[in-house]
Length: 174
Image (cartoon, rainbow, N blue to C red):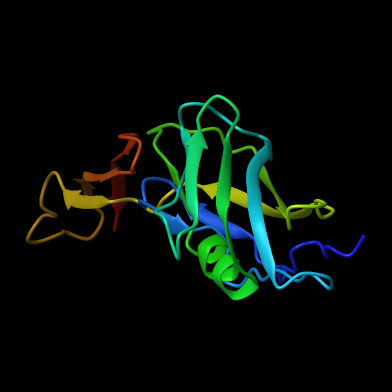
């Protein structure tokens, strides 16, 4: 097969919940030994896809058009362009997770290119979705100005993560 599979470095996206759009793979490159141009590329969330939470996004680059099919979790890029232009197009695809309480199952991303005659073997990478750090931390009650040895005191600290989960309360004794 003269079409080489897209050469992607071991780049796996670690996506933090509610962090907006992130570039899917900024280092992916394509190769084809018998053609200086490609006609299409397909990028698919081939396992772990959750609709409507998982979104791939693409804006046309170098005359290469693309659309995201939310039903299949796939972007199909089309347009005759050079290998370098397809590199730029693939490197511009972004991922976003729109859920406030998403699935943390890994997502497998599959890339296939085509030069108009044959398709490449698939190349794959992974998206790992992780919870965000607590977004707010505040004292609900102020610590006492003075603590007497042997006395009890209570300080309530309210911490909230990006899902709205709250953890609070600390009781101390000196």
